[in-house]
Length: 305
Image (tube, rainbow, N blue to C red; front, side, top):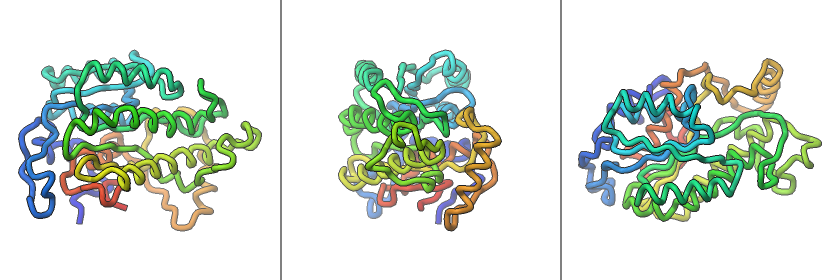
């Protein structure tokens, strides 16, 4: 049974696995986890997308920084929104090297350029956290002519992860990919014949969000199925309901719409709001907990689904 629960905080998680962040070898049970026996995160990079202030990506970075990692790569569109996080990391851990990478997940050209810059900075990546997302926004299209939520929440992370796989593999046994998804995936499956909602004519903000999060979950499942777990473990996580900057497009009407949709879904539980500290804990469990090997690639509020 997991030691973590709904109310667990990010600081509690990183304190438990401090050795895996600071780089000291964490001896594990050689019978249950033979290929991880001498693995720890080591002083190597963790890459987090979308770590702007006021979100769980930033809180994830700050929790990690509290345990003095060697390198944190923070990738996002607007440095001005991420600079306060970089400044806080410097205060928490002056020895940590914080690297900002400009990354716009709505543009495949931007993603490719970002990967070139990442490759120039590091020779491997221990953990990739696909955290960046938008939620329930008005209909629009990306630079590559994709429905914007599907483009930013899934296609962008899919391309980024694929291009970074050589760097993740280079980290050796125990490298991890963590996709931050949502229980809202239950609002919609994949509309294989109509990904863009008939060019927006039948657009539904929550169904579009749900579709993108379903795709992100399936991406983690496929990685877990196709790449040996002794090389890379992949997870998708539902962090819970959190008041954060992700909800900037969500108004009272949108909230009512989401509640109505959830009432029509069997066993869909609407939980209490979490703090950012509680919200980032599931991401950190997926990134750090040595007992997770990727056999069960989906985590909800700190526990395997």
